[in-house]
Image (cartoon, rainbow, N blue to C red; front, side, top):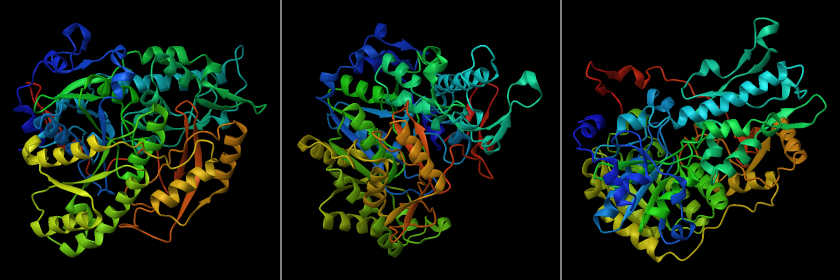
Length: 556
């Protein structure tokens, strides 16, 4: 059966029953129908957060289809609950771009899913829409101020960095000229759209602690310069109050359930290759506050992207530290990084698996470099052979790393009990705090080089003339203390997607650095990274449909 077929056969529990698992009453939650709810922020308890164990799920460098971090995160949660460890999974919300593009949704797969998958993968509780509207309100206020004669801030249109956003892959909107059509339509200028998941408002929502912090961060969004070279922020447009008002419900995390009826908190959805790639601080703290045992969460793509940003940005900002890190590896991804053709990843190829182990080893080294203990989860596919699996197990034994075959897609929690025991053992034995890649007081160049050399394995970093001008701007604005959120391809440890495995002898090129002062980081952009993806030649939307009874098909 397909993922959606499996999901439809599950008898969902009323959301108030799921809330009871977290000691919340029906009156404590804000229900969105029978199977979804919002949890008010008042239930976050910083003291309780320190008593639960936090488990991060990351991965090796993925194939274009992804390696199943969300599926493993959900399956691990089911497995931990099966062995008597009260556990909640905390995940990101799906973006419609990948849902209708190539990668699909973000609700897991097979018998390891969060439900209702159709709702979660589509509009859910409207969080993305609210983020989009808040962002676009600021964009409208900017253009209105440029047009205004009585309240003009004297903004130089050539310096404006804020773009409009929409939750869709649409390459035609990346670069455009707006306000054409005459005097009454505004002042023409170059602009464009980003995808909502890459917007600074999304990053802010996922890093803020409460409404007051949200408003402060929204006010700190850097807009551009006046013709007199004075910096202008969203607070100068008096935008933060109205923007926060649009986000009054979106800031509350969402409660749903797994296939096996365990609690799942889903909130926020920044991409890891062009943003921080983790769910919200609020959601993670909510999970830690309400779950008496463990919280399982994931960070996008490989450990060079999502895990690095989870640790260096989110954990430092929120005062969190994982007790164990699960690295998801698949036979197909190892074959891919070992030189096998993308079309032949389901064909047995032990030699390619051996060659691809170098990529896994680098991600293990990265996690250990953060002073964290990794556990390898082999996300099993039906095409995997015992010989190929044995190669990974032998390497794990050689490195002294726990490893487990996770059959969560086919068996749900029953396929993750061994993984659950090994992860619980590591987490419960942990007594250390993770070690960040750099110090906040380091220069931006030092921070970028620390990640490029130590996490990616680069020999060095080069900067275009535009990037060097951006560094001067950051210095001028007094933002050198901010962490760096590097935008880089997920397909390679380098900034060149063609360099698979564990490349060496390469240079990372930073072509520009965007300022996200509200989110609290700067974004060095490497390679050909763009913040508005495009659709593939055959988008997933072609297989999605709805019948006369309202039953949706084709989602995955």
